[in-house]
Image 1 (cartoon, rainbow, N blue to C red):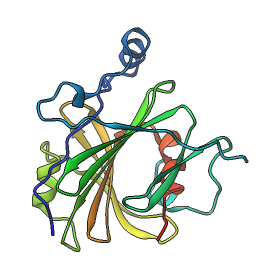
Image 2 (image 1 turned 120 degrees about the vertical axis):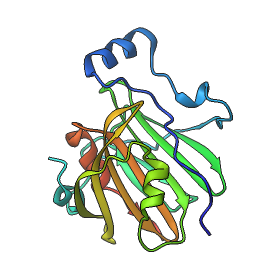
Image 3 (image 1 turned 90 degrees about the horizontal axis):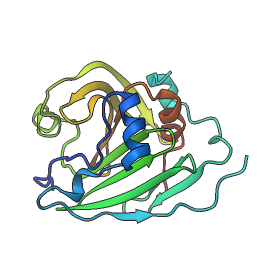
Length: 203
């Protein structure tokens, strides 16, 4: 059953990269949740030991290669999935209530970040109402179909706009009665692609 829970950003990164670097160096990163009324405190997740060894839709769907050397694995036991990310990344989990959760990955050194919002969802397709609930700007351009993980779960990727984050890149898909919304910043394809390619559901 779909819950009436909408997405909220849990990290703030200025649109301009130079400003983001300056703020990161001077004052660190700021989480929107820390000062937002009613926000849930996040739980930081420590990933295991590092693994040895264009953001086009086709590139995202390619799962044939191994994660880059040194990447570490994040495992989410609640929703039974995992992915690899660079060792500088910090992951925080937020319980949004109603069966929803947000996972935030931030890389302070490279000034990168992504957010995975997961919410119970009863439909087989993503409705316009759901889209507008979670993306108030209504911007949805350069839409492409892709797949996620070895199971090749159908997904849609598109560019959007966020009043807080600026230009964003979105990847949305439905799996086992949950809607997954992956949000990151435009222009981070070299950082994002290995993460998405390594995504696996463990059931």
